[in-house]
Image (tube, rainbow over all chains, first blue to last red; front, side, top):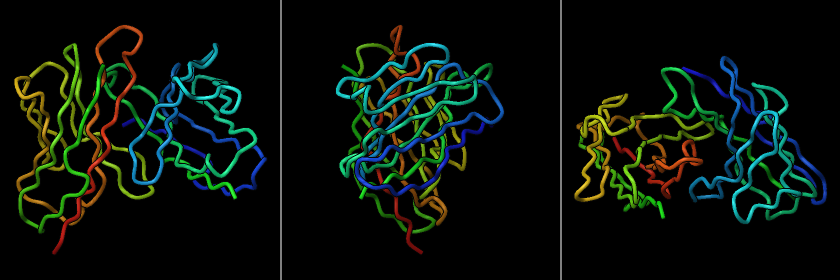
Length: 117
Length: 116
């Protein structure tokens, strides 16, 4: 099946710094990718839809200036958490929809655990 | 509004006994429904999906789920649990309306523990 990777898998940063998380589709192209946030013992919440060649679409309540999304190519989307604060500590997961025979399925990355001190 | 409710946050079973993870959904339209599994420090893996075809859906690793429109349910079952089934399970609905075709709404998750 299709594979989505994320880098880094884990990051610890100081409050006020910015952190970039990469999401790559390894063996397929993705014009759209999705970014989710998962707090401990909670479910995944969609943050934004990343669109190749256009602006990202953010869900209600998600600050677009704080969570910068860039869909640089058909296989790469990045999420930058700017001026991170402890409340931004979470598990960030990306996904990309399949194509062809797997168009009904979304493929998820392994996630990035962000800890802001 | 679309939503999905997983009725149990934790389920504990003995190895070799049946598994039942319950899920109810709310949707104004005919939704697509999915079950995903998340092992620690790993990405979500699709177990099975319902997309308006057969109401009894068979997935990987012996799991299956039945779509019951009258009960708005999509419970996940497995006849015999294995130790490797211990993980977090998410019931997911994909609303069938334009503009949100690929958006997924996740349930809160059910943590399955399997004891020897």
